[in-house]
Image 1 (cartoon, helix red, strand yellow):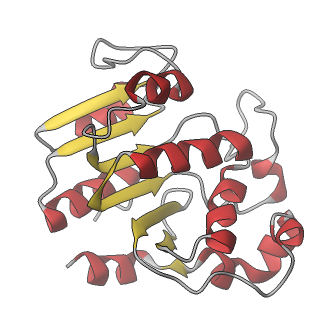
Image 2 (cartoon, helix red, strand yellow; image 1 turned 90 degrees about the vertical axis):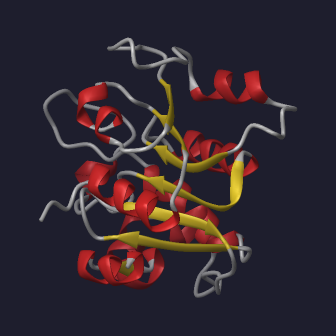
Length: 203
């Protein structure tokens, strides 16, 4: 049984019978994009490494391009672009603006297991999650109109759906985005679930 991002995405597509998919940050299409089983796929990446990427632009430019077109919505959106807090936060909000009512957002790299993995600067050859997790935690702390949890698989796959949640109020937000705080409160802060728990949810 695989426990990677495309398996998670495909299981959610099957659960809800989704038709339209958007991937932000495709990079190598063979690593994920080409493995997604769905009728319609759009790929966004400013440095396209394959003809499958039909929007060779940054995510900001893509969302600016479709701004005002409220009819453009997706069932499922996978965010794996620039792994920095400010960009992930923007990508989440823009994705929510173009998400179907029963849609799902999946965010990669939400569970860095060491402090070195969540630095802002990427070093070639070293594992890197960036500060993606901070963008995810921002919504966990501030938006009670969402359902959120992180699957403990493939670097942490964060799930966001429209719904409701008890926002994290146990400390000040600025403390919540410190790695030491994440390390001490990982399970509760991320609302972390196992892959086996995900399988039960998706069934």
